[in-house]
Length: 395
Image (tube, rainbow, N blue to C red; front, side):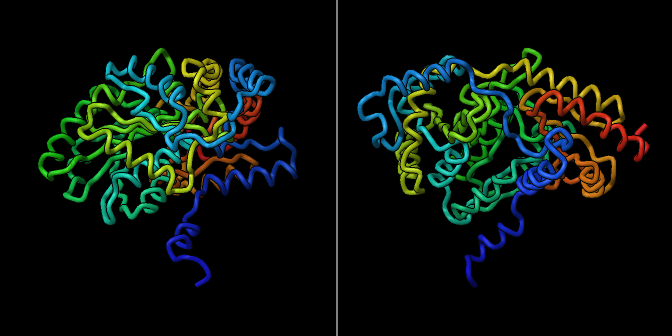
């Protein structure tokens, strides 16, 4: 065999999100940008905040000697301390720079975390619907994923998680605000999850970690806030990036942080720092680390995304599409109007409307719409959604 069996299997089940994105690129070349309604990928259309551009200009005009050299594998302490200050304020926990590691995006943070805690055969629970790459990241480090469904409103189902716990369970990945549903897990759910996992950790004689994937944590609507996982869950690791809140997906800058209340947290941090090196990341991009150190209280204009959410949600529900109203992130996750969502996906694609099937997220019967696009594209797409609704007799 030319390539590894495991990679060949993963290629066969590779992301439909990327395939739809590539199809969108192809169609735009044929029909033009304004005639293709591509809601396939979460690629922010907003530009980074002005403070980022000013910081970038200042570093370019007044470079710091040695600013492009290697640093500690964990990253610059100045940056880590700036992040820790904000985390400590939000959680009430004594988070310091020693509890933070700069990473190559949230994906780098997830892989470093899993590398540090998983032995071969260890199980990691993921909640459907979930970001498809979780399965691949878990497999990267010899783990086995176990899918647990959420409730009808996509909130955490504590009883279902309890049924899935075994002596091999090592972690559970949560994602809040969630991709693809936009739901935010409330503090009561985090408290209940902590109680469950504390008891299970004691029963099985080793900690079960909660890895909280939070790249959308600042993108919350209607005055809602995302509860601090450190405040409610002891064995918690926060992983995130600035891809969404600062609109920097191509710069691959993120971090992981461990709850300082974890026993032997220094050992855990050492393991994750080593993982940052041995996985080949070595360190997060130096220039980006220097820039984001001063931007921890900045974000893109959340009001623009909320306006797009309201336009899309209100319009589609009036047409008869059914969905849970997103509380954050920038996705809608409606029920498919057809029993097989691929039928709907294909009908939409024939009209140059690109959305992603729910099966990509472990949740057949739904489809995802990413609304981090121009408002004009959303407005122009609405007649197409209306045509589909009429063809399928949604009302």
